[in-house]
Length: 362
Image (cartoon, rainbow, N blue to C red):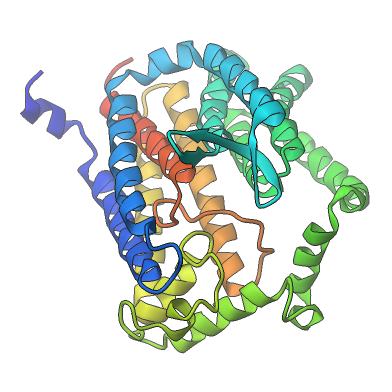
């Protein structure tokens, strides 16, 4: 197949929007590394970006129908990997969810989210009914909850929560009846008190300080408060790359990972922050467009899972920076430093481009 034909079926707009976000992320990590102990983060981010692009094009090159066909095989392997990490993984920041490869720490639970999208797609695409029946609902919940439970046991509640938007979005598109939605909401409200009891003390404190920032301003509320100060001090045009006081003097811990939005807002101002959000809106709108053009149920479901995942990552992460959602360690796709999140996001991007490329294949 000629290069011209490939490019004619390749979604350059989605790719360009994603690369613009990745470029801003690289700039942010570079700025964060100027005066911080994470001075090697910039070079590592470049490596992770290059590796992520490689993964993206590998996933893009395999017809997504083949990936869906082998989704359950990948799912079983991923569950085995999560069990292995639970038994033999490395503990970082209280979470035993890390694997060390070549001196680099890697979090498999991030990549498993993409495999869960494929597994749910495989199950839903084989259904002939217009609406999900009770047994279908239970089966989908089981598929999603097995990795969720394993990730929770690893001590990473934030990552575990991000599986639910995938499940919810794909079930809605798959034909979830309103009574099931109402039942799940009622069950969630009924189980909320029990869920609170099983949370660790530090997890409870992070939730409480979200509603009352003055509860522990020098402890659990410190990071969020400093993030808010950084965003506020950026003004309209920002302080300039590398000139943010909150960012460069280390007032916001882990600013190159979970709070990179605060760094960009301080150093590029309100205009830069709005640019980031507009780019995410553009990327998500392109994905919705791809879903509309998809020629089969599998393509629509894949796009739904990916768009749901990215949307809630952005909402939760930006909410963390603004202090309106708890700080639960959710990275900002394509912007935050980190190899695990990068590989997961680029694999998801490759899938989305894949669906667009094969939109004329039945």
